[in-house]
Length: 278
Image 1 (tube, rainbow, N blue to C red):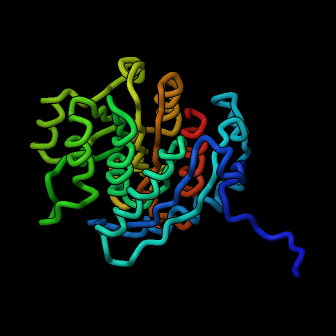
Image 2 (cartoon, rainbow, N blue to C red; image 1 turned 90 degrees about the horizontal axis):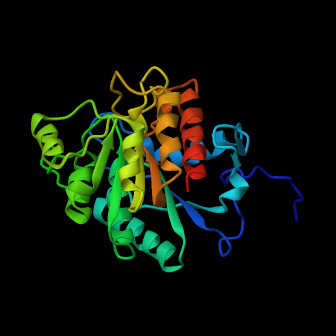
């Protein structure tokens, strides 16, 4: 038998024992409804490799990943071209995570992967608020004739948790009707301090990486100028630490659109900092 050592393909700092972990990281390499630049299916694997270029300690939070006790379960294996079956696989696995009294941390993949996660979690928690970081509203009923689309994910989630329980941050692109829906339900947040309103809620955090400006995150499917700097995003994360976060995901890295690898490295750091909030 070969003695190695061999390269670890899991996220650095993970708890190798699933049973004793508090959080389960699940890779969701799905981009079947991407409307512009596909490729986010390759993100989970490359983010894992990039994670080994970081330390487990975060100076920003003063915590180490080993204090989070998360287990990297690897990537789900999706049937190519079958959107509904892929979403079913996510929902079934996330349900299993919560049935075993753990919390979910997802790595996409496109943003539609958040929908089955919320469907699963809503079976175990009530009074859920979804904190949505994104450049785009994602509040269309359908896109290009397709109801199950990454451009419609927050609309469908609103049907589960109630639109008034969605809080959207960094939004700068969408249709007029979508912005009218945001105004109707007061979903937009402008300052990190506003997150204190969610203190008594069960909070799910979803981060579309295009919330960051394309000057530091060009490797995404739909880049949108005018986004956050990394430190601006971290100011929001500081306020998240006081909330009851029951699950989270980070989505929409398309790594091959940034051959420098910087976007993937930034994505890995966003994931590390969000893990520290849980």
